[in-house]
Length: 188
Length: 188
DNA sequence: GTCTATAATTTGATAGAC
DNA sequence: GTCTATCAAATTATAGAC
Image (cartoon, rainbow over the protein chains, first blue to last red):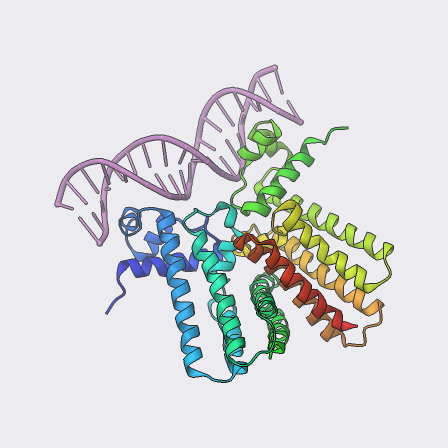
């Protein structure tokens, strides 16, 4: 069963935003990759903002569906956090792209207003998930301390993707990720 | 003595890149803010890539000139690292913008080739400066361990700027920065 | 150094046929 | 749902006058 057109459009838009940013993706380029015309892309997503929102929604949903899977599958916090870091690692080593929301967050000032809540929501849900792992696995720290460590891990991973991509050196990511992961585990 | 035109152009271009990214800054917008025409901007910087390189060069030079000042002025590593973090803090709380190279690094895929070495150089010189502070102030760790901690601090700060900007919450930056700073100080 | 004028291209978006 | 055709605007960049 082939992917429906709307799905293909989101696929390509996500890839373009994560590589090049919101301004680089054009309806014509997407259309050409799907094998249709740009007016047909507008049929599925009337405006560029609509498409970006759809991309961000699907990205977030898929990301947190995977995290929920992990929560259900694994007990040990060490494994959970390791798998969490793996999701950012995959962005670099498999997709060779940034986190969608890392890119969009950087471009906040030139984002259509409707896209911003999706990006904010992604970051907040990351912090909520990390905090939840800490709390439900017996952290003795205060909620504020846990939240601080969660923020630090998320920021390190977002920054690590940018630095590793810029330096064209995957080892940079590994250095940052392993130390940040270690630091986060001090919540326990 | 009023600023020469070329300097004003770089001022405005830097501000635009740090807020909106490489693709948002147009020669016409810059010209309008300087009070000249876009063709006059091309007189000073033939291409957009030329201008971006000039912006990155000046940004880096000014950044590391300030770091060298700090190295000459202060002895205590605690003060030095605190001042280092302050430079990123200032980007958020004073400029209300990202680090120039954080933004350009995210946009790596769509950057003119001539700009990339400047962005790479910025990150590398950050790591060199941090490592140098650690080594000259008696860290017992291996070069690799020091480099790892330096990378982690830089990534956290770059990520913190993006997250704090996105969430519109300066406190997020403070949380991340203070913990990352603490972690880096374990080199000593 | 700055201007007017303009070229060549790309962009997001719409109207209307099929 | 997809197409052709088109629009209005914006973009980087250049030629040539002053």
